[in-house]
Structure formats: C-alpha cells, structure tokens
Image (cartoon, rainbow, N blue to C red; front, side, top):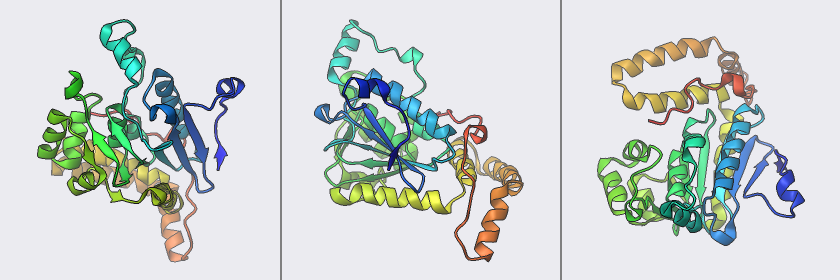
Amino acid sequence: MTDIRSEAEARDAGEEPVILSELTDDGVLVLTLNRPDRHNAWTLEMELLYNELFDRAESDPDVRAVVLTGAGRSFCPGMDMSVLDAASSGAKPYPTHRLPPRTRPLGCSKPVIAAVNGGCAGIGFNQALMCDVRFAVPRAKFAAAFSRRGLVAEDGVAWVLPRVVGYGHASDLLLSSRPVTGTEALAMGLVNRLLEPADLLPAALEYAGELARQSSPYAMSLIKRQLRDDQDRGFSEGHREALALLLEARKAPDYREGVRSFIERRPPRFAGLGEEARPADGEKAG
C-alpha cells in the first residue's frame, strides 16, 4: 500500500495522523480512524481530515472503492467525551454549522465498505450506516446512543436506518440506544457479513478489490444515485429515471468496454472516476 496524501503537520510533530490513508494496487483506498488510545473517538480534527480525504478520493481516478475501518479494537464509539462535555456545557460548542454534512460515504460516488472491528456508536454508528456495505466481527457493538445523551437521531439516521433494517428495528435502536452485537446486527440486516477479527479487513479488501477490478466506476456512481434517490420515489417514477439513466450509460465508453471485455473473455479496462463525473446531487442524504 502507498500513502496517497501528505501528512506534513503530523509528521513534523512526530505524530501519526488521526486518520491513516493507504491506496492498494487494486485502487482501494483504506481509511483507518487512528486514535486507538481513545478507541478512535471522534474529534473536530478527525472530522476535518475525514472530509478532506473523501474529497480527495472523490476526485482521484486511481481510487475506485473505499474501505473504512478503525485502528486497534474499536471502530469509533462516537464523539470524544471531552468534546461532548465541553459542547454540552456551552464551554466550547462544536462548530457543526461550518462543517459539511456528516453523510460523506452516502454521498460519495464510489462504493464505500465499512469494516467494523469493534465498538461502533454515535457518530461512528452514523458513518458505518452511511456506507454502502458493512462487514463486522461478532464482538462488534453497534449503538445509536442518541436518546441516552438527550439528543435526536443525527445526520439523517432516522431516514437511512429504517431503509436498512426496517421501521421496527430502527425504532428499537433509536429509542432505546441499546447496543447490539455483530451477530444481532447481522440478523436484523444492519451488517452484510460477519467475520472473525483476523479475516475482517482482508475480506473487506477482497470485496472492494473485486468492485475496483470488475465494475465500472461510472456505472457504480449511477447505481448509488438510483439506490439513494429511489427511496423517495414510487415504482413508476423510479422506472422512468432508470430508463433515462440507461440512455445516459449507453453513451458512455464503459458500456462498450463492458460488452467487449465479455465477448473477448478478458477483464474490463474501465477508466477511473474523477471529480468531473461526480453526480451533481452527491451530498443529498435525506
């Protein structure tokens, strides 16, 4: 793997960045939340870098898929308690009005896979939920956590969660804030696959690598748009939009390459997706 960004400030200070970023030869960008001594608890520094890295991934044609995970034994337990304490007391309000929406994986035109390796609550829960596919370990603990902090379902979670697990499970998770294990999360459809800790990241990388090697980045960006936007449409409207997008896709080079690679029985050679090809409404979350 090779680092795709300069971490000059952190390196000059002799520190590791709060998010590690590495790009595999397959074109899979691995983003690792990197505060293991604090279980990868969320901070403003992490949030700013997180959005910067997603912006770079969006505009870099060498990046074809993203895997999001955590360092150590946790994914992300939510906001760092020191930040929560300062924000709740009014001593140092969190500047949410100056930050992009916390829906970056959902709005990204490239597939994002969460590899949930441990505790996943609050903002961490939200970010995993915004990913397209979630892998987890049996001991992972998922919790919305908001009702126990006197908060509402943040970041559009009340829109996304029922569409992932159904209204009943979403009501349970959001009203109770109770933690559920990876095993229960799999049963309710919150995660797609359950793996042992040693197998988690390799499986996520293998899956993301398959997408990067075999699927058209352009087509995947359109499919992500369909999956998101069709949640607010009836079947007839969704069908009409699919026909319009099909006409658009058939004009793109990836259609011809997909057909030719199948006929010639070879791997496809699709072009990467950069900033110019991002769906115009890529940040819509609900």
